[in-house]
Length: 261
Image (cartoon, rainbow, N blue to C red; front, top):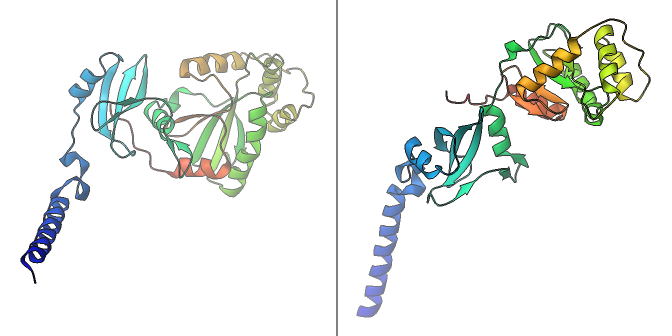
């Protein structure tokens, strides 16, 4: 073998050995935190123009990004900073495989409410009243989205006897007749009357004097709820908008990480 050919082969093996050695101890083979770090004080400095208080920094599900939780105006907001610390991402972060908004789900997880603050003696029950897991739903008797969501609640309740829905009347101002219908439904405490209203059928006038609907409206404002349907899970996560039956069960059963205090 010529000397030049022997040298080329030797250089190839040396290069391959060096590459493998680098990969063995480099970022690609271990925890990204071995090569990248972002502390809470450092994140606070990077976000000085954004405002708010950085509460937590952790690796994001999105590769190459840090998830930074910022408390501002009474809410905790998920933001993302890349490993180079030059780019900030806010708003929706969609996972293509599932079409889920990871930032939106993080926001829900970070901004839980105290379920014990929500009285349910006025609630309509869909499902087994003795079910171990109960989801509170703020509902409007004239809401088209609520009409579409109700069959999903009924499907979950029929297939899972350990899950029930506690429906509280929360009429929106955009539906002028909803307030009177909500009062009538609360007085009758009738799921059938709610179903009739959602189908556009006539609802009789309220059969009692009640301020419960006004209390529900005030409570919704305190909780930051401004749309229907809004679901509140037993662990305090608040989901605006309806979900299909399978997603409801999945969200209910998943082990979501509790936010840092």
